Length: 489
Ligand code: ADP
Image (cartoon, rainbow, N blue to C red; front, side):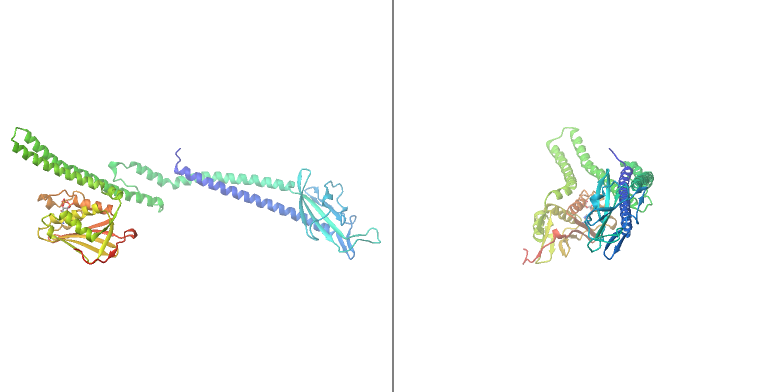
């Protein structure tokens, strides 16, 4: 089931509100009960105080005068339950017609002058019984006056129902009020929240509508960022930037495809033409041999293009798939240069330059690194005169290792510099003069550099020469190890 963002937000909001309102209502209910309990204790305390005040302290004992101090308390139209006991637990006074079993509470467990409390069940109701004991500190002594009886101890008790009629009513009233208030607050929040959510998410709905309009043929379409100065504005700006990059990448891809098909069509057309002409009539063996040799050259060219394109497509994946190895660059470069260019006529033009007595270790992919350096050297040889030096430099900096290829050839026009690493780019001069090449060598270097997390760059001056660089930045896992070495042969 699909839930819209608006409904999801609402559900979260309402659930949170329900929890808060319930907790709030319970808290109020709890404090109200506490308050009623306190009230009960206050009333009981007041009853006991009145009873205590009705007794008189004489030098020889305590006096209770039931006839003089006939006390009746009323609460909610009910006579309050109370009783007075002497030290032996005999009840000496209580209101008339009182049925509560007061006899159970003739002794107080608390020390003198302290109110004790205990709960009791009677008549299907919960009661709280409060007691207080007074002690005269004397033994019993009967006065001459028979009306004046003195007691050693007096125990006063009073009992109160835990749920009085009025407190039950107020609690019931309170709980209904809380349910109603919380319920209507929740309902109002649901209606208002829905409206607010709709308003808050309006820019998002508009963005979704706009994004729906974007198709592969309409990559230039951009979102109108809402001026909300919030995450939604940042999101739409980020989306537009993503679209910029995508559009550029799509344009590059389609340029690449059309260039690639064009590059492949040229040798294919030439091949077809040669074969058609050859098949038009019977030819002697020599003629067939010439046509076949020429056709083979076109096939070799095609094969080369396909290989280069495949390399371009695979470079990233291959570098990720194969594990990197530690290479000691000074020895490795010497070895690779000899292996790749040892048979070349211009091998003697290649000069390797690095700080002596130093070994440079780099974690890299040997085959890819060879390919990138070979492409630089291949160009240097193509675009500089035989006999001019081609310098290969290994430069060590504290946080970067640079491999540099410099030639003293024709150089590159400033306007071309930013494009030389684009696939199929060839300077117009080279195209016109029919210099061999596909414009893929430097694109491959760029791809290799990105696969090896390296930077690539070019500096050039027309008529003076060019310098191409690959820079490897050291991170913790790729810290170069510099060590001394006596001499490299
Ligand atoms: P290709 O050399 O096959 O044309 P590249 O991708 O290797 O393709 O080079 C792209 C373009 O960059 C070349 O056509 C050339 O115009 C320019 N270029 C590359 N290297 C050099 C260099 N060392 N000197 C002058 N121009 C160069």
